[in-house]
Image 1 (cartoon, one colour):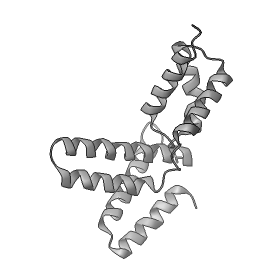
Image 2 (cartoon, one colour):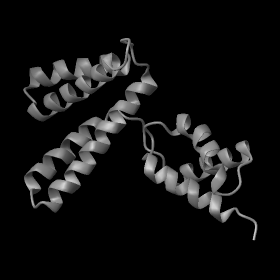
Image 3 (tube, one colour):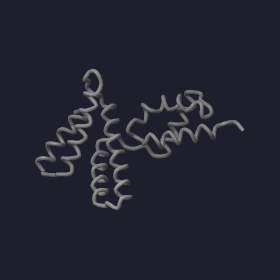
Image 4 (cartoon, helix red, strand yellow):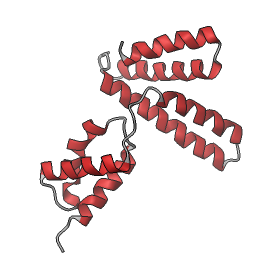
Length: 154
């Protein structure tokens, strides 16, 4: 069963269980997937990697919203956003540890032969498909930049 089918099955189960937050969150996720499928000139069916990207984007939105609600003193809304983020995270692959990410970055640098900040694009191009949905893009970008600046010959 694919990820989209799993989401649809879990939506049905949450409706039966009358679990409001799970039901609402899965509906939002499925809507985001459908919107992505019909965006552009032609409708398409997303593959698993693309669905994971959509879900990762939705999870990131929830994290950012929770932070914004916290800053605005709306703890109740922040809590709801965090709960939705946790529900979406169930469908994402296991997140990479810092050590795993560092190893993948080093491997990508060796593979591309990149050196210095100018090689960042090459490294990210190799790394992006391997880490899709398993690490925050901003954190990966910062780690790649740091790795490339520390590998400069002095």
